[in-house]
Image (tube, rainbow, N blue to C red; front, side, top):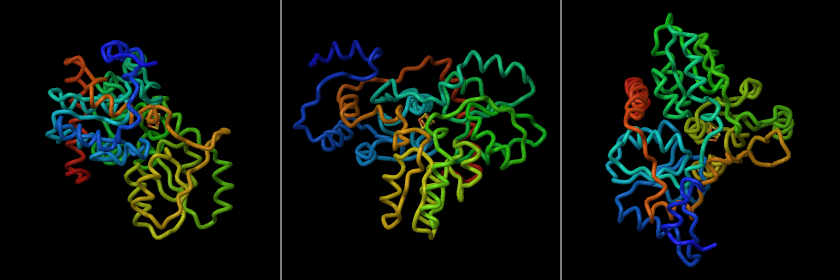
Length: 337
Ligand code: SF4
């Protein structure tokens, strides 16, 4: 149904995006490039976005890289092709810039697994604990945390904390369990998880390994422990990408969201990349939240500068502190420039 722009604007909170028909004759790649220049906008995209969006982005990265880009950009508008907590993080770091997200309903099952009120009560049970939270959480959880981390810097962040300081790690229990093993800590773990990374089937991966005996299994630390145990390499999305480029094997079974395969194939064109099979009848392991963003929604949100991320200033300031601590520790550890 064709509706006008003011009607579409009034429905944004309910629908999540501007529900307007896009002229099919438009070359959206060109239009988006034009809008970037006209509006001095930067387009940041996560590796899990659809290939068309990755191809038109100014910067493609994982959570750490995107947070860093958002912190240093001098663009007037940040268009964030990712999920809500990522765009929210960009807004926390850039209160005076307009931050746009093509679909406000692009959420995250991991962030949703830590409701703020329940977490506040959980935290009260451990008054002497420091809270380290994975960046995949809401601003409310960030505000209840002491330091934020990403999968790319989590180990360094944990290691920067004195050994006798007890820690709560939230919201991802799989990443937390992996970090406990790596660092020898005994962090108290919040019981959250990502629906995409919990779906891999150990049995199907074992069968795949038998069919491809030379293939290396590489996994994101949000995967469950049995998958991590049989992996040849574990790392953040960026670390997985770099590993495939530098490593001398020819075949890889990739246990993370399939969006990263687009960039991997571009950076390592001669290699064979096999998405790890999920534990259901569907053949893919796409993140349904990430994939809510489309090229059409991206174009519309840039053209009409909506949906926009707006935040309460008190909450923004409270959630900024632990992100700044993360960026400081990452800089000191040489992880970012
Ligand atoms: S892949 Fe998992 S952690 Fe990432 S946005 Fe989707 S649900 Fe959240």
